[in-house]
Image 1 (cartoon, rainbow, N blue to C red):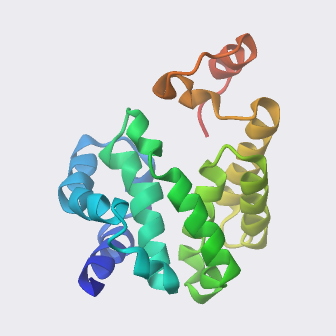
Image 2: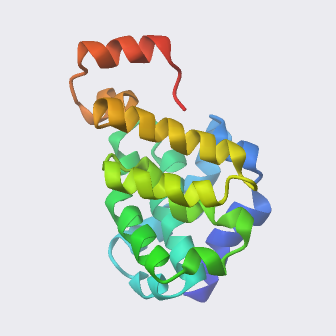
Amino acid sequence: MRDARTAILSFWFDESVPIQWQQVNPDYDNKVKEHFLDLYSLASQGLFDVWEHDDTGALALILLFDQFPQFMFRGTSRVFERLDDAVRLAHFSLLRGFDQMTLPERRKFFYFPLLHSENFLDVELGVQKCFLQRDQEPIVYEQAVRAREIITMFGRYPERNTLLGRASTPEEISFLKEHSSF
């Protein structure tokens, strides 16, 4: 299974460029889905759980559960189906110092699941970790602070309401009209 882990990390960090992670591109979405849907399914069944015990394996799993679903399942609630696993892996990884064993430009991916969580304590920890990286990743830190502001205001991310079948409050509707997603 070492090759699968390497494939995930190589695709994300060597074959992709950061702009691809931030834009909507059906071709890129399909590429991620074609290459990694099977690995995602196997990991979801627990077949790669042993990966979580080292820094590169944990990072590969976090990417598979937190980042890749955003492309494979764009526009559906499935984007969030493994987020709890990604958050658990992020906590597990931080306790073991895996983020500090990783190249500085890759560390943020250990923090993103925390920022994607709708639990204030997770988001706050993500902000604290991004604060430590603010010199290398100022935009990520700004996004983290914005995430905390939204969670503080609403206790959730209003832009997810439609996808998750949640009713929006009048305040959330007003907020969504005035602000774009971070």
